[in-house]
Image (cartoon, rainbow, N blue to C red):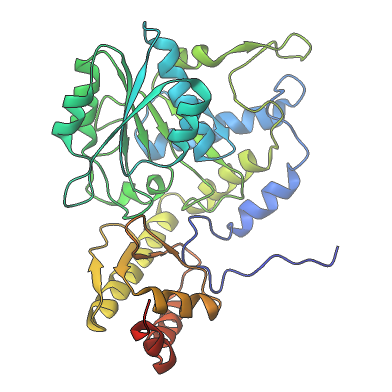
Length: 359
């Protein structure tokens, strides 16, 4: 095969990154193993236990249970599935902030549940009053986001958990991207801060594991029983995962990345990424653009369509928020020199001319 993967040197909008060298090596070693059949592949099954223990340490969960999924989409779908099975109603609903990931729309479609979308406030966090007003006796799950995809915001997780449990619902936190940076902040977002039932956290994002490596965590192992199906022709006769066969690459690379980086390496990575986001935000403001304050390493700025298109034509892999802002995620592969080059292109006369052209 002659095709080569593109480099990350102009990728500014992805929430995936280059894996840590140790994670890359571990992924190759366990590529052909199947943690979906732990009876046949006990070594990778033991590694998955180690991976879940590691994620539990990161998220404040003393007795963690869960599994390494294909990514945040699968983990979010499974969290909705758990909640649907726990609630005693034929018409379950899930309350989700409008900042929630699109995977919840997939979950609602697949599982036949009603999705109640509630607005966010002026700070792009979920409106707590709107959540309370949307809950009723059929509510199975209340979702909060710890590191939103568009603005990097953290919802008020303790309040959401309290509202959910007062209503007899479960509480799920989507920390797919934020989970590996939030331990080094003052936010209250994890199992030790609130009565969260389930959580999504993706090692293949800020965790620097190889793709695919998502994570589903549950406070109590019994919650996984809601997902179990019989698998009589395998050595292990029950399975709680959504996919059947899974590569052990994600499991092994999660453990390898954790062993290499937790906690000091991840802390330094967060500090570097946040410093880059703060620098970019200040620089864009200096150039006259309206910028959403980066509370985590993600920058959103109101950049004209012509400017955005001109930057894309120069090879920058950038995206927009739902409101149309330029969106830059300061992942581990995003260096200050990359951002300086990006700003140089943004400030170039040819790009500026595009920004003033008629739409």
